[in-house]
Image (cartoon, rainbow, N blue to C red; front, side, top):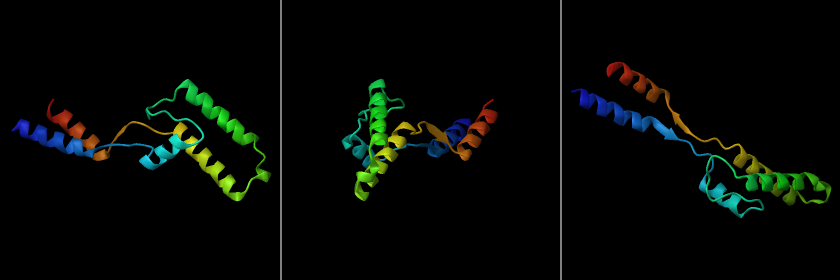
Length: 112
């Protein structure tokens, strides 16, 4: 009986755990084809080379005289800066729902 309860709770718990990915496939492909470099491995940390490249690109964008640009070029620059911000501040990890957390606590109390 304990095995059935344990496996049922384990199955429900596994359905409540969700992985959160910050970037979708479309934005990842756009970032790779952009004017700045993003690694193939979309891991937690960026390499020193990628960080340096992104910093240099941000400095280039800040130094551009925007009065000479057309509206389309300004929009592209804004989009590029937004993509860079998303790459730098992308969250990572596994988030457990409240229901999953309650099940874990109940399992701990039952199986003690």
